[in-house]
Length: 212
Image (cartoon, rainbow, N blue to C red; front, side, top):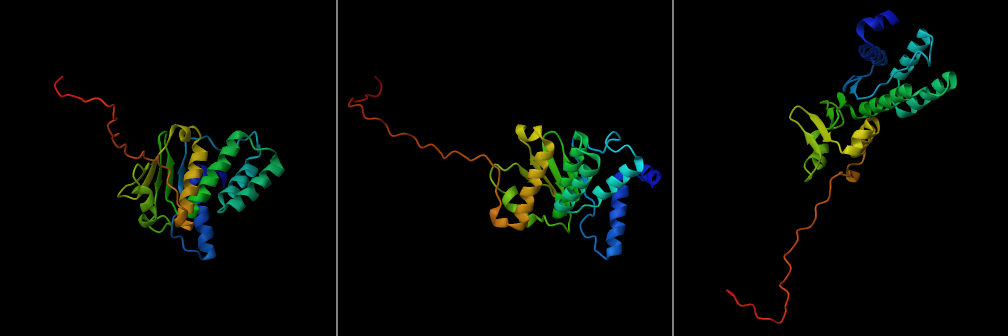
């Protein structure tokens, strides 16, 4: 199997594997089974953490099969129990999978984060539909934009750019709340200052004579 993965690529292998499982269960695929995740981080299981290639492949397969945060937490606990504390790149992989779980919950087709913005490609059968997003994209001063080809983007602040994984998870959780509890949707927009009215002229007791 490891040779098969090398030929088709890990991401595609995971997608084909999940589609086959869904078909066996009689599930409708609907929104994408495996959303594409592109984040500016290095994330993988290093061979120094799991030296045996077959065991490492098995760990990848277990992680690829998670669809909820509870399942991800259980899989990570199993890794830590068997191989010890996760190194930074493995921890980054777990956080990337957390992004994937949130994207699955929203039915997103693609999650991509660049240096200054995050872009989410929506799916026609996903939970994020234009009517849900209207409060976000129509607010005055909003950092959110929705393009005609159904790509939702958000401009990132400097502080958000410093931790791409935390920012991505925060954005997706906000959108998930907007789907589950629309009335609790909050919009991260700088408040506008109220218009300043001109101050009334101050009375000094002196007569101002024009032209002098």
